[in-house]
Image 1 (cartoon, rainbow, N blue to C red):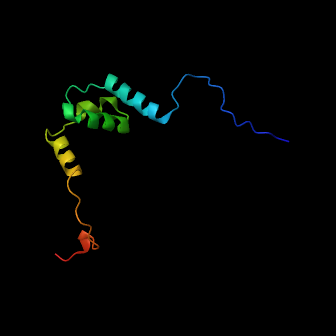
Image 2: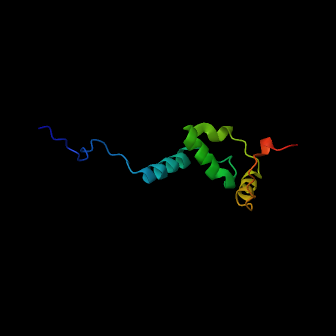
Image 3: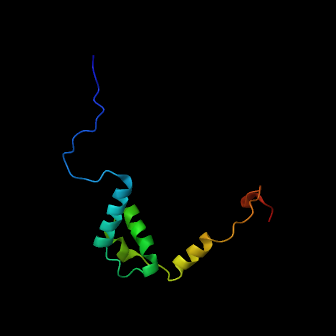
Length: 94
């Protein structure tokens, strides 16, 4: 009879293995290591997410962010919902 041991194996290394803690640690590392000085203050969160997604801590130096981008994005996000049409826009007559 072959019995499978389903217990978690003993840790050999000290590391974070809880999803939300991994994100917090990752974002803290980015804020510590990336030079975010040239990024507008209201766009810092966007820059950190872009760096996290790309894995490039040096990405901040390449970013050019329009001063009104974040305000426009927030205004668009919270705009009143439009009515849904049964006909997609690309199939309507001009």
